[in-house]
Each structure stands twice: as structure tokens, then as C-alpha cells.
Figure (cartoon, rainbow, N blue to C red):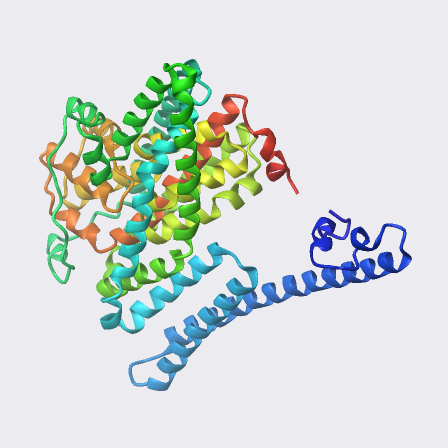
Length: 510
């Protein structure tokens, strides 16, 4: 790279007068080359300034539109219309910024805000857009099983070091248990301090609440949870989206393949490696539709529930997001600092998968991109292939925090006064039962409802959570993905394999 910041190696590809094309001793070529290099540098600087101005303008217009919306009244139709135009103007400026930056993450943010505004302005039309989000999630989910199978088989059987696999498993489980326990305790402390459930009346759960989907509320014993880890039919596991069962089958298959003689092992390894690479390419194609899918999913949610349904539960929502922020700031960030993780580079690497998880409220939707980004960040492929999928069942930090918060919220709303011993037993039950949580939307509600049922708690207050579950699910899912990405880096550092030699330049601080 030239000191000016221009990639000199790229210039000969499109400049016939570059030194490499005219000869290194030609004075004309050097003068022309320097002039073009200066022009490219100026163009890059202009584009950077334009992007910053577009982003600042979007924030200013958004702030003005919010102020106008708050000042409007039902009688002042023109003020409401002005606020509407200003909000859409801010979204268009954000879209222009995304176009200038050419970043998928920026376009996902545009889809998120545009979907929310569309659902608010035209809820009737937004109710018909759910299929956009559904199609996107289906395309993502179809990638999960073959991607996990391919990457796990290559990661385990590729080096045939079974001792390393066992070592990774032990270290990962120790890390998962410690971090998820801290998340449970922070959620419990947050709801105990805010006491958001007190003063809630059961009647509010049935007046104007949206229709809810039926949930499987059967409580699982510890033996049933362990049994459900092992698949009885791999095709059934894939069809039902049982990630942990797919992981167990892939690990056992890879271990068996590692014991096969080299001549017979090589063809299957080549197939698995080709499969994983193909699925990563397919992921890149599917991700191009992410902004459209996010737009449809968010528009449907806002149009279906409306803005007003969230107001009575604003205290609970604020409690969870403050608790998630505290968990990131006082648990995950110190862990990253102790593990000497380059924070700025790590935040850039996880920005896109975390944004996808936040927008879709589905950890599965972000898994392929998260695996790809962590590998590019410098985590070895075998570590990524083992830690991330396993963490989706054992290290859902945001879900663990939410589950303890929601369970105590139910107790507070029901007017139950629990002793310290009862609360400890409930948290221990959550710690065990949450290990079977799937990385899909509303899975945490199943765990909370099953735990409340096992303790014979009234479940009516749980229906209050349905009104804001989408917003809560977005936050806890984003933290799930963030925590699992960090876990893969920490375990790789623990193994002495981070950063990988081929990715050291990506993790070097700027």
C-alpha cells in the first residue's frame, strides 16, 4: 500500500499508464501515476466527507421529526404530515449513506428503520409483509444443518487430534457455565431492583393483547434434557431445527471419520470441506436479501402490535436493556480485556451478525455470518465450528438474563413473596433447563413458562410479555450472538491459537 493510502497494486489493473505497464524508468509514467494516485486519494477523501455529512443530516432530520411528532396534536393535521415527511426524509438520507458506504450492515439498519416507520404509518399494508421476513428466515435456516455438518467434520476429522476436541469441549463448557450464571444473576438483580412487576394487574393481560401462538409448556426433567441432546433420527433433527442434535451427530461422525484410515478418510473430508465452502458462498447470496427480510419482519411487528402496546411495559423493557448493557460492560468487556482481544477490530467483525440477530430476533439467522466473520477475524475454523454451534445451546447469555428477569417478573406481578431459598432453586432450575434453548424466536418464553409451571406459579402474567416479546427478543438475541462470538475468540486465545497466522493483519490495531 502506498503511504497515501491507495493500493498501488490495484492501479495497474485499470491504468495503462501505471509504472508496471509503461516501464519503471519512464518519467512520464511516474508523473502520470503520481497524478492519478493523488486524484484517487482526493476522491476517497471526498467520499468519506460525503458519507459523514449524510449520516449527520439523517440524525438531524430524525431529531427534528421526533420533536415535531411530540408537538403535534390531532387537530393539527399539517404538523402530523410534516412529521411524517421528515421521518421518511431521515430514512432516505440514511439510505443514501448506506449506498455511499456500500455496507450490508448499513442497509440492514435502513430496512429496520424503514420497516418500523412503514408499520407505524400503514399498519394495514404492513400486516401483509410478514412473508418477506419468513422467506429470509427460511433461506437462512436451510443453510444451518449442512454448514454445521461440513465445518465440524472438517474441524475435527481434518487434524485427527481427538485430544484437542476433548480439551475444547471442557474449556468451552467451563466458560459457558460461568458466563451464563453471571447473566442469570444480573437479570435477577435488575428485576429485583426495578420491581417492574409490582402494580401490574392481571386484567391488563387480557385487554387488547394480541393473539398469541400456542406454546409447549411441558416441563422437562434433567434426564429428559440430557436425552433430548441425542438424535434418534438425523433427518428429523434437521427438519425440526434441533441444532444441538445436529452438532452431536456431526461430532460423533467426525470422530468416527478420524479413526478411518487416511485413504478412505480423504474423499469424505474433501466433500465436507467443499460443502462448508459452498454453504458460506450461499450465505453471502442469502445475506443480500437481509435488508428486505428485515423490512418485512419489522413492518409486520409494528403494524400488528402498534406503538401504544409497549408503553405500559416500558419499565420492564428498560430494565432488561439496562441489565444487558451492564452485562456487556462489566462481564463481557472485562473478559475481552483479560483475553487481550482487540476490541475495536472485534466490534467491527461482529457488527453485521449482531445487527442481523437484533433485527430478526433469531440467533440462527446470524450463525452463518458469525462463523464466517470469526474465521476472518483470526479464530481457527475448527474452533469456530465447535464453539459457536455449541454455544447456541449452552451459552445464550442474553436469553439466560431474560429468563431470570421474566420469571421474577411473573412472581412480582402475581404478588408472590419468594424466600431466598426459593429464588435460588428457581435460578438453578433455569440454569439447567435453559441449556436446551433453541436459537429461534420465542424459545425463551417456552423455558420461562415451563419453569413457572414446574413451580406451580400462575402463568397469567406471562401473557403480558407477549406484547413486547419481539422488542425484548431483539436485545437478548443480539447479546447471545455477541457473547458467543466473544467465546470463540476467548477459547482460541486460551488454546494459544488466536490470531491465526493468515488473519493477523485483520486483528492488528490501526
